[in-house]
Amino acid sequence: MNRDELLQHRTEKLRQIIRHAYRNVPALKTRLAPLKPEDIQTIGDLEKISVVRKETLIDLQADTPPFGGLLAVEPEDLMRIYSSPGPIYDPQGKIEDYGRFGEPLKIAGFGPGDIVMNTFSYHLSPAGFMLDDGLRRIGATVVPAGVGNTEIQVQMIHDLKATGYVGTPSFLMMLVTRAEEMGRDFTIEKAYVTAEPFTSEQRAACDRHGIDVYQGYGTADAGSIAFECVRKSSMHVSTDFILEIADPATGKAVLPGEVGEVVVTSFNETYPLIRFGLGDLSQFVEADCDCGLANERIAGFMGRTGDGFKVRGMFVYIRQIAEVIGSFSELGEFVVEIERVGSRDMMRLKVECKYGSGELHEALEERLREVLRVRTDQITFVAVGDLKDEEKLIDHRTWE
Image (cartoon, rainbow, N blue to C red; front, side):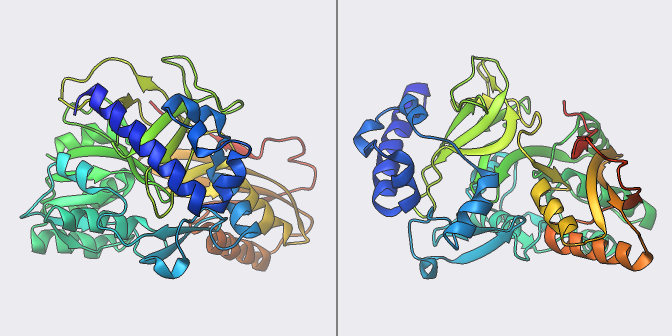
């Protein structure tokens, strides 16, 4: 469809989803007051509605369990329920390709005849099943590989002559390196990567190994939001979303070309997220794309706003770390430092400690892994007072 047809499609879908959510989603009716559905007729009218941010889902779901009053169906009518760090419960409705990954995977060249290593987790988090559903919809054969077990995965790629990979770019690099160490053929020809930034260095490495990589952008809550086309210069916004670039402080649209928070409105009748602030920063790309898609483009990930950040594809919240540390009477202030070493994110934690021990170190490390579901690479105890007035998060990573 062309630009005018796309605008008409989204406008009609917006009016439908607002009416549907007003009837079936208690939290939206509260947010809209005193507005009524008829007050939201155009995409511009969305600014009349406050932004609800991803990190606030933790509080919303705690106050109104289990889905914060945002679900439009009964929990027993869902296909699956996941748990993301926070904790945040994510629903999956009973429709085919619920996460809408089929379209970007098809554009990335996946289809019948492909044997694909799906290296996202199938345990609790939704990414594994979301990508699995999208791959099967377009006729690919899926290997539910999950996270880790690099040696076994390399052997399977070699034995099965697997042609495709979906997962994080950092894990793809780990598999390539491990295959070289093991002396195994790495038969992967195409890849779809998401959940963390894909750097120019990683793309160049994939090109050297003959792997055609497409990058996508999505979340556990909303599914696939944007994806690269054959030009690979930016990401097209999915037809099934309205995406705004908004000022994090006001919720209003930024000027063309400015960087702001990604705010999405989905047309998902099971879980209609209206003006959902993702905390990610990006900007619209104004120039037209000659690939043939009329969908507008965003530049991709350009940083974070708020207290949430991603490490190795998993969201981590400062409040989670604070709660864990607060449960130990011996511990005080803390600082989290994130840096990128090669293709891997490293998370290091400094904590003020009154009197430390090996047992305390192990207990803290284990508790953080349970809550964050990602390993802390280094924990260092420092004297009380050393971290006074320090920022809680120091992120040394830079994004292109």
